[in-house]
Image (cartoon, rainbow, N blue to C red; front, side, top):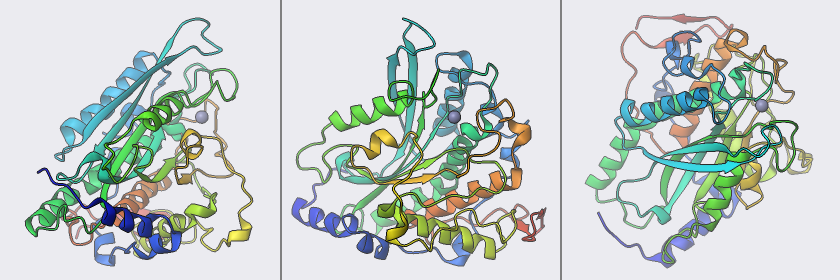
Length: 389
Ligand SMILES: [Zn+2]
């Protein structure tokens, strides 16, 4: 339905909500234990041979090849035919030469899948933005890139599936209550970016890396919303850019890289810790992936990992980078394949990310109960077991 919101009020609300980390933290409400218990496991869909989400991505995906096209088709099919919610699909195509391919123009296709509140004007929606790259290294030939970044892509598909129905129900309830588009709250959307061309073809440099994310960030910087909109560009409308990379190897240690998003890191770490205590994760209770919630402002050294967030960060976007330091031992070797994944860790990432997104999107009271018999309970010692409930 068309509507127009009093712009001054919205701008004021937005200033309060997003321009100070303290206020933003206050605006964030943790999910109840009951809601956390409703976050589904990725389960068998993360099986490396037959899993509906992960298995189709465990194949070489060099830009411009059939493997790349197949992976893309897998994503588009999933979001447009498997999810009942109305996910829009945006293609961002670009071409570039690379140092490995001479004068030939290599095509890169990044995808953005998005859900906004159904009543909202696009320029008025602040979007939680979740990103991973789906391309794989050009060399060594046959490189699969399971942690880099097939697993992060599958995790984001699981996230979308896990919040889809609750988003629909929440927005329907808001409309029914007359609260949809009343101008009192910032509109919240979610978008998932599956980026092409992250990898360098010869050796990492400003021009040989991040082909897809550089093109996308440039395009969005130049795309202007209507002047009456809350946000000026799609970049400005990113409330937080969460980048997942190199996930699926055992015992990950995820530092908090950025002081300005440490509050968001703390929320994700808290969700992880609560899921562990509730027995919802398969890795041991003591193996917290995100354990730097204690970090103080003066302890941020400014060090970070070059990755797809850089073109966005350079343009002022707030970044939460979920990438382990040190990197997994299989990084950029032929061993980065399905067989070397740690499946409890992989499935735990799926659940942690889904819970964080459900919390960010305020889905308390709207998450459906897990189907009877599907609830996966864990013993907290690294061995998951299925319980019939
Ligand atoms: Zn890589």
